[in-house]
Image (cartoon, rainbow, N blue to C red; front, top):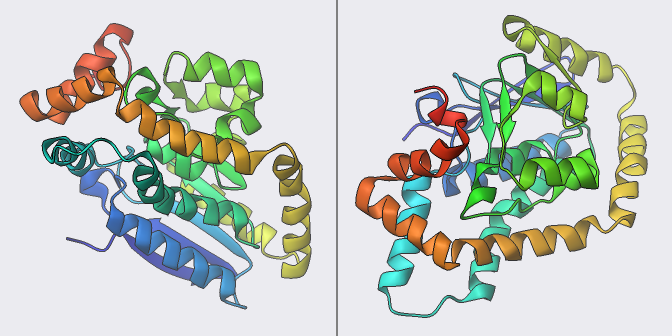
Length: 280
């Protein structure tokens, strides 16, 4: 298995690059651990002022690897033990705590997004301070239709109540230009200009003294903290486990085992005509 993260440093910018393009940079325990280490290292390095999170390949992150995660839940069911909600939350929190490192890193984090950034990929990327996308990028949380809830709860803090409900209560996909208008991300640029634009912006920011960057990030983030971000995150992580263990969630896992997870996802999304269903 290839390394899930590689790093580069230039002009005060540490690039953390998701580097499993053939797998659409799906989230695995290996990616979780590598990303956590990479964020910690960048935040501790005195030569780094800005962190740039980006990805190789056609997709930034297509969410959790449904192969290993549905298999894990199927094995849990076969064990005969009742669902242990606290054990589930402890395991899920190891992923959420990694995403939140982007938020709690003292240095600013910019994410450059191309292609799919959906489901768990949004749990990750919305913890960045600034998100820039290519015009062809797509965001969304399709597991809100069955089998999940956003764990980091960043949708509400970025969009406000009504717009967050509009997208989460349908699971609808959000093309990058629409995501800009809604306030989910900062801006989008032509796909071919994404890397150059995001890198230039990160280097521009890196000209500011690092202590200034750290103070200003802390000041801005404190507003969300005062609004109850920690409580929302705790509830989101817990409810994600609940959603995976409703009858509908268990049926989704059973269907994934029977027909394959790609087919189960198609059947979930076909009535809405979006994501993979729209592109078939």
